[in-house]
Image (tube, rainbow, N blue to C red):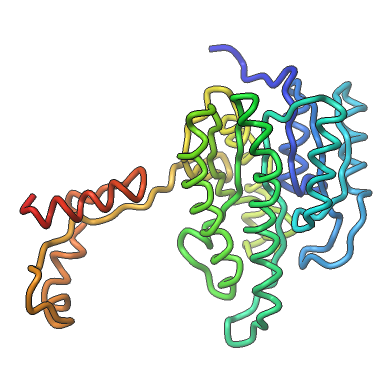
Length: 301
């Protein structure tokens, strides 16, 4: 099969000044894309800022013969996001791929966490995905083509101590992706999520030091390249780290019908083994399929 190429395609990567985003931007450029390198340039906790990091990545791309422009907007700032998209359109006239990668951390146990710590993490990860997606959506609809890759996390899928704010935001991103993927299909807009396990500024204090050398961002970017390609699947959550790739899905058990009269918490308790039995569990493609299961069981199916 032919190599995946992005010649004549325009790619926006948010949070591309370092770590995963930088690696994504460099690889898209190497494969022929015109790249918008977005990065606020702030610290891991979201403080500070400046576009020097984005400009440095642009310099790398241009030095290698590629095309790129820098953008220092925050993904939470409506005007800044609009400017990022407007710059891309003014420079190249289209936007084919958006990789929503920007993020911050404010890790604390929930007992010690302030609401402000929750607000800013949800704002950056969830709304900082929503706003760029919204800004490119109509452009992609008019083109009848678009590829959007959002970034989730194992914390969002499975939880992690001290990251309730981050986990809530990252699972919210998956819900956003799943719904918009259904809306985008008629216009050939595919949405997928990458769930990276990588050594970056955001994970250096979380992952054991001996693992960091085996979890370079270079091992995640190939998954992003595929999810952003013309051959991309739709609605997938791709887990990538250290050369390991897998797909995460939400499964629902078949469950049991307990009857419509005299239901009680005790009946649920007494039937818990059958309710939670993984035999015949199924991943549903949309909410309607799950509701259809409920009606099927009500009718004795």
